[in-house]
Length: 375
Image 1 (cartoon, rainbow, N blue to C red):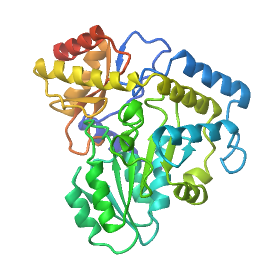
Image 2: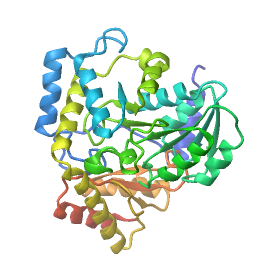
Image 3: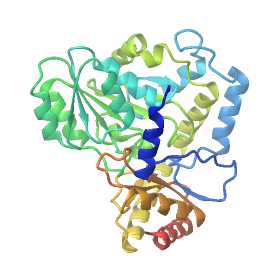
């Protein structure tokens, strides 16, 4: 029978406690949200929603085609110029999602004959980019520059090192300065995914590359999503102009995908300008993360110290993590739940988002709920 194997896989997921289900949320949820990636609280900001609406009224509901045909509007070009200037890079290229941006960067910069060195803790989009790239991929230990150096030493020729800047599971930062040093020893490029750094780290939220002095370097490329700190949707690749020109001509997720919807571009541009005027939002997101961590550990919970705005709390098992998250929801708190295969080390977690618009009372309430519902 066609697709008969699906039932056995479904049974295996059920036995392992790894069944996932969609849970549509209402427009106005009564839950205190520590599950989304709306780090700066901009997704519903009036300026951002008006930016989306104005763009839709001006340009229509969709981009109408791929970027190289009819899908590039003046709004897309404006967003790219301002993203590049804000983050400190020479040029930028906007994609329909952060996932598509990562696939583009890795596949276009890891051609046949090259070496792609990938951190074991990288996001699935970077992993899939490595799988699709025609170069050879070597996966190295998490946040281990020595392992990267050893891998690069095995190859003569073009190479890139691929890493998240802030890892999505525990919220820890990659040692970007050391990775850049290792890359420069071997003439390799550094490609970093700043999905969880843009809007949170760097001066006024300008990103992890800016925070480490790597923004605008000729051998550094950064990707990011517009769906987290900027409260919109889409992705971007930032880097030297010659790299961006190469992506326009070689990146399949750019050439063959419909362009980012104008409403998403308008929302992202409005959020970017708002962040430029209110850089304290980035500072506040980090402060909330630190306060969450301090209160959670004081309550006896095993929480990982955050390097940005992600705070994770270890759970005893996948089943208990799911129940814990469900009990939090029943008590009025939405939290993320990460379990295998989403976590590379096999340890299940509650994942909390430190949002810049959380009050002290909301932080205290969230910690109290998590403590009272612990397995």
